[in-house]
Image 1 (cartoon, rainbow, N blue to C red):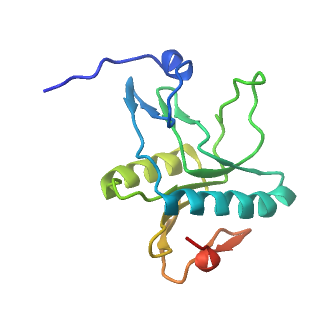
Image 2: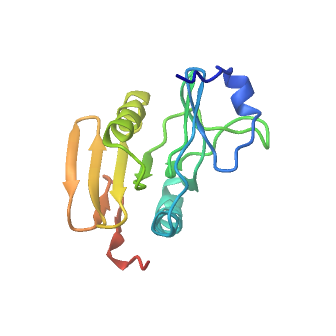
Length: 168
């Protein structure tokens, strides 16, 4: 059995990764390398959500570190956030995003994905989308429940995005 060495949050924040990793209570959690479909959908969502979020004074960003607890940093595939505070070049999101999006990769497990969803909701995120890029289906999670998406249209109370136009 291999035991990974624990690191501090400060060490994590000052470490670069080829593909940004998450930090959960001293452990570095590597994220799967995105597939073409994953990356293409991520780019589409950033473009669409950037335009939709602008009137709400929100910014759509890919793979932004979000500190959900003192010893937990998650990296949603896309999130819609207000401008983070802090010194230039060292900003991380410490306030709950309006929306976090997890785009499934073949290596993702449902238990790991749901752990992130529940953590986002406990942190105060209003909306969490979990999207399967292959089928353009998924779920919309809120603090009050979950809705299945089978028509490719993901929504919040303020906006919606139709994934049926995404080309792979």
